[in-house]
Amino acid sequence: MTSGDLLRDLPRNLPEELVETLSESDTVRIERIVSTGHASPEGFWYDQPRPELVLVVQGRARLEFDDGETLSLESGGWVDIPAHRRHRVAWTTPDEPTVWLAVHY
Image (cartoon, rainbow, N blue to C red; front, side, top):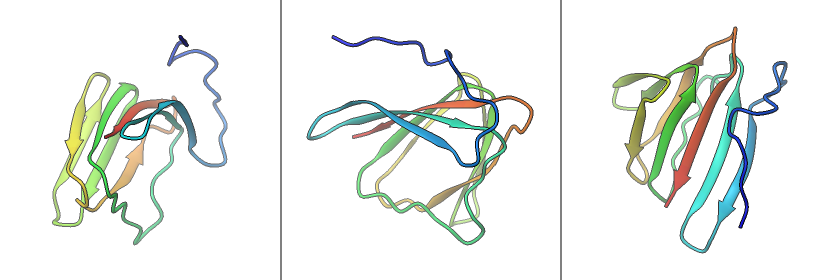
């Protein structure tokens, strides 16, 4: 058994997003992601082979989808992104860490 605290030891000055795998099996990967003002590079789109459920635990973020849809998330907000739905992180709060819980399944 492993345990932890998603909001503990949050780095504040990150040159890039911090992605930590919390648990993984053949079919599921669970990650904690910490963003401090990070966004996907211009023109970059995630196109993942598995669905991904993301939950903003702390902070705020905005996702963009390649069909023009945008989605703003704040603490407690989540979205289940189907496999191969192209998306990107457009914005995260620069003045506090945005903490994500991502479940790839």
